[in-house]
Amino acid sequence: IGDGSGPDPSVDALAELERYIEECRAAERPPVPRALRLRADIFHGNDDIAGALAAYRELLGLYPAAAESRDVSERIAQLEFESSLRDLEKTQGFRPSPEAEAAYDRADAALRSGDLGTAESELNAAIERSPWFPRAYHLRGVVMARGGQFLKAVEDLKRSIRMDRSDYQAHMTLGLLYKKEFAGAEDVQAIEHLEAALRLRPDLYRLHLLLGELYARTDRELAREHYNRFRELTTDPDDPEAQQAAEALAELEREIRRDEPPAIPPPPAKSLRFLDPKLQNLINQAYLQGTEHQDWKGAEKVLLGARDEFPDEPEVLNQLARVVYAQERFGDARGYWEASLQKREDQAEVHERLGLLLRT
View (cartoon, helix red, strand yellow):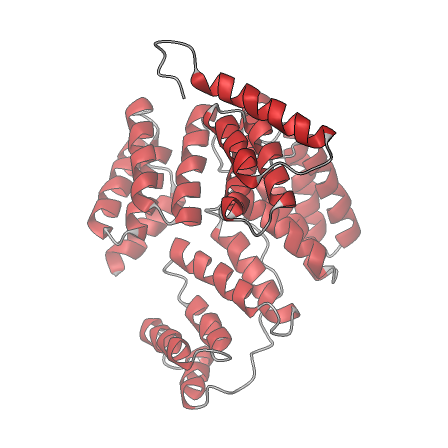
């Protein structure tokens, strides 16, 4: 890539590669994988997301087992996410339209009254009006699950998580759905999403019980760890689930419990505040680095830059608290949450999280 002091050599390199690929196509022979990879990497380096996606997909389609394709699936997923972020910046500004919010509220009311058909049609309308609406995908996933359309439910819940990786309830819903409705065939996915929910909300100790039940099929040691952790955190010794965990420790081969709900609807979001689109983009990038790539230091660096740019925004401090909490830096998390409350007192969730932290 050029340094700005002269012509960019990647332009000439890309032109040569394009000529070579056109010659190969004319001769009806595939280009070599090294050339396809170099072309895709140049597009990527030049920040041409559409060109890079097309080039990486061509490489993966022609040479799925080649060394040059080793990390291409991950690159495609990352670029697709970045493309969605950019489209959102141009159109929606990270916030659903008033019409989409109204349709969502009608769907929520319909679901609570048991009218799945109306709930689905209203959510379809909400998503059509505001395609980047993670809560709407989440709720539609719940509607699909309660109607027995489990594959459609999985698809919607995955989209919701893709848009908002910090939504612990979407992870819980998907994990419970995999656990209850797929007869053990998707236990790995169930564990992945329930563990993600637990990382985001360590105070939800009943997740340890569910994870113990799942691990009981394949890993007794991990099952025991989760059962023991659940018993340690249970405050009521007469809690039936605490007794259940004790029984499970003695007999790990018992069947999976069948009484948990198939899906958890997302909470109402009347308290959501409008964030500057640039700030929301930085927050999404930080969560992508942290939850997807486990690069919590990188996520923290992004958010520290956001704090410098948006010093009066308490949500930056809340996000920083979550990132350092994931690194078990509980004192720093407390400091960020307390600083956030100094900027804006009426934050019920922050009070809740801080209270839970102070009790541990």
